[in-house]
Image: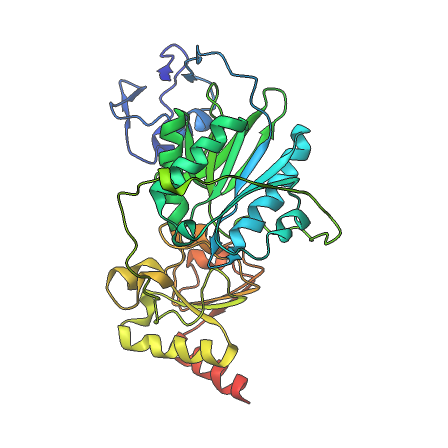
Length: 392
C-alpha cells in the first residue's frame, strides 16, 4: 500500500497533522508532508476534509483457492473439560457459518474428554475428536502437526481458536505450515459475503487504532480471538451432530519437548476470565500494601481480584490478575474499578462488562466514559464504606 497527498488540493489546514497518532506529518510551505515510517493507519485520510490524501492498496495477484469450505473452531480443553472460550467461539462460528451457508466443525484434542456434546448444543455440526493420553498435556508440537494435518485433509475456509496461552503458542505455527495468514487477538469477526472474506478486527498500535484485516488470497483464513469477547448463545440441548474419531498414530510422533509438571498459580483464587464479579485496583492505590483493601472487598462480594497494568509492572500483584490489552479480556456481570484512570489499553480488556462501577477522585478520568455508575471520591474512604455496608 502507498499513501499520496495531492498538493493541488491540500490547503495546509493541519487536520491531518493533529490526527496522526505517530506525529509523522508536517506542514511545510502550507502543504502537508508525510515522513518516512508511516504505518498507513488511515487516520489522516479520514481527517482530511478535502479528500487530498489517498491510500492505494496493492491488489493480491494470487488466485483464491475456492475448494475450501466450512468453518472450524479449535475447541481447547483443560483437563477433561472444555474451556469457556471454546463454546464462545462455537457460538460465534455458528453465526458466521449461517451467514456463509456452510457447516461448522469443532476440533478437540485431549484425553477422556467430557462436555463435547456442549459443542453441538452451541451450534457445531461435526466434531473431529482425537482422544489419547499423549494429548492430555497440551504438547504444542504434537498439536501443531495434528491440526495442520487435519486442515490439509479437509480444507476448511476459516479456522478460529482462542487467543489463550496455548492458542497464541501453536496456532501461528499451524498457519506457517499451511502458508496462510493469521490475525491474532481479534475482538471482532464479520463476513464479507460477496467475497467470502473473514473481516478480522483487532486493536493495533497500542490500542490507538482498530484495524480490520483480511486474508485475501490464502486459505484457510485464520484468527485467534480473545476470551470473553463473544457471548455464548443459548444452548439447544436437543441439538445433535456427528463425532468423527480421528486416528492418532502416537508411535510415529516424536516431541522435542517434555512436560515435567504443571504448577498452579495459588495467588489466583478465582480465575478472572471466568468470574462474574471483579474488583480491580490501579495506581491510585499508591502502594502494594493497599491491595489488601481490594482483596477485602472482593472477599465480601465473592469476587475475583483484578488489576490495571501499572501495579503489575511495579510488582505489586502477579500478572495473572492483569486486565487489559496486554493482560486478560474479561466480561463479568459487575466490574468495580478502584483508582484506575482508564487507559485505552485497560478499557479494551473490560469495557464489555455488563455493569461497570468506577471509583476515582479525578472527575475527568477516562474510566467514567465507559462506567455505568461513577463515584468521584477517595477510594480509601469509599471502599471501606462499601465493605462495611456489605458486611451488614
